[in-house]
Length: 375
Image 1: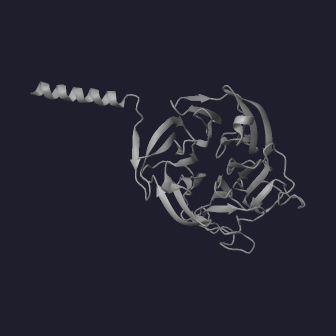
Image 2 (image 1 turned 45 degrees about the vertical axis):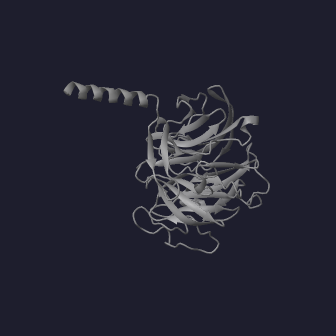
Image 3 (image 1 turned 180 degrees about the vertical axis):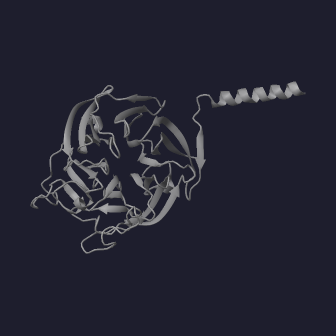
């Protein structure tokens, strides 16, 4: 009898091992409208800040911590660190930041890579573009450098979006220089718009303003780490970190002032007011949505795929401090409902993107890439 039990147990273990061989274990979750599972794509990427998709089932991920760009084969999960990547200043919030292929990548091959540059004495954010040749980035051109340089390794932003030949991108206020977000003679605390080759459009809102940086599209931002286009309306949306409370989601329009640090729905880290402690002021925009307490948002994507039809049109945001995937429901351009997914997962979600297969992908600190699939 004992031998039979041992034999049965051994057989069950063998069947289990065979059935699991080569399989990717999945974690199941429920939500208000869709049940889903997480499937790991790859792991061992400490801070997966930027993420994008290329043809032939390839993904690129930036590791902010190391300054690397990593190519991932989505079929096998294998990784390759690319060569020829411009050196990043990897301290504090800095390192390899966002990455984005041109919408016509298959025709022109351009990749856009943003990162912090400089050293402990002075650093800033820069955007390069280049072309992927084999395992290396080549034909690299620097198309933007944020000014001024500053010593703090904090609040570089940054996210990018391309629309109709224009590159939109964000720059943080560098923390200590927060008042710079209200002045137009610098790039700090701003959204910028340039042509995809780095030229400045003549119809940018402050081209005719004395002493203003002509790249500026909007201002009064703190540390925006989410930027995306609504695929249905082509409107530009942004989120930014508040201090202690007051993370914001905004619909971005040219020339407008979004208030930081004059108005804010949060307080400082020592529990004192920001400035005069006011939340409204004439000539300054109110957020479409804000979070108190902070969720520490990072990454942003409107969902338009068919894998989760009930989520179509929802805006997804990664949350780091509150470790979840934030889903916002819109109606007539207004945010009317919020849902928090993956709260039990307990991971700092750094980036969220929709893949060409219509699924959502998330990158978590620590660090791995997961694919959301219908359960």
